Amino acid sequence: MADDLKQRIERLSRLLYESSKLVVFTGAGISTESGIPDFRGPEGLWTRRDKGLPITGASKDWAKSQPNAGHQAIVELQKLGKLKFLISQNIDNLHLKSGIDPEKLAELHGNLTKLRCRRCEFTLDNFGDMQQCPECGGGLKSSVVDFGDSLPRQDLSLATKHAQDCDVFLVIGSSLVVTPAADLPRMAVENGSTLVIINSGETPLDGFASLRFEERIGQVMTEAISELKLIMQA
Image 1: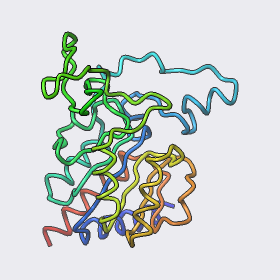
Image 2: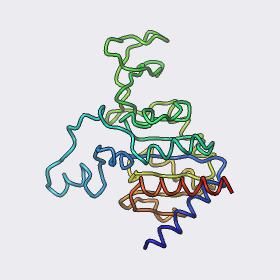
Image 3: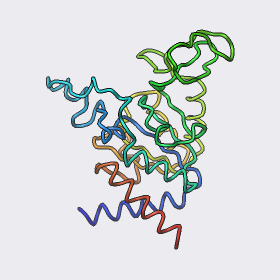
Image 4: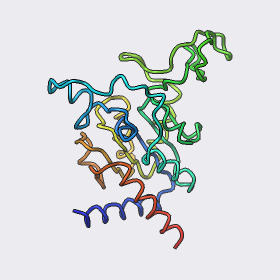
């Protein structure tokens, strides 16, 4: 198994090296190593609920959480010039906290630290006393997307554009069951992209993946980045 993991990490590193339009797609699973529970993983909120087990971690103060090795590995991809775009389903602000360029990020489900204008969708930091949009005067609300709400138009448009145009689509920590976000990797495959999935549980798109990891995200991504740097230095 160790040899198999090493071989898969080497394949992932080679894909990252050869990619010129890499898109990374993250779900709640990338933040579990920061102490934030996911939803459908082995100990996820919905998994435990469906088993009749107590839900743990739901009341954690996410503002105190820090980026982990998985987040930092994506930042390393950015520093190495390999990250074209990052699409996230997460609202925990850890990607921005880790150092991701906001211009390279679409947060499809919003961000706990941001407000969004109801009219023009301008997004700004939540300082607690802002009520009107500085751009158009519209009313402000939390940028977090509630059940039944539409996804932010600009973020979804950017995510769709990059999914259709990428050469490698790397899924990290998502069960790929929440649509329309989960439609993006399928869209990438249909447009010729290579799909890689790192997730602790099964996904509906496992059969389309050229590489599949169920190992810990931090381990896989840290080792893949180290291998990538060796390839780039050769």
